[in-house]
Image 1 (cartoon, rainbow, N blue to C red):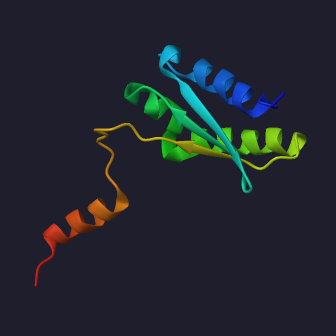
Image 2: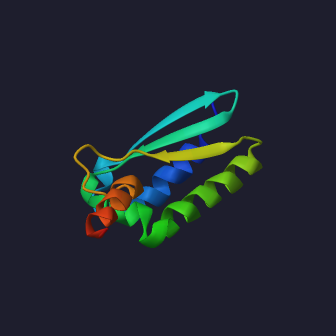
Length: 103
């Protein structure tokens, strides 16, 4: 039997945080680098998972590492950005700042 304590833990935490728990999807892949958990949530719930300055996502990742250490596995979390996201990337932001440049 495959040990899925990390996936079960992530599912419990994320479903407790979001407004639409039925839309939570978690994919678990194991390779030579460890365990990769890929999280997909409803686009309207992304802010609740990421948190201010990414603090909620960092906390979830830290807790997953602890669960992984308990089971002798390296666990990483990838949060998939939904299509049509309005989040600005740092690269785009830097280019927009040049619009006010005067020579």
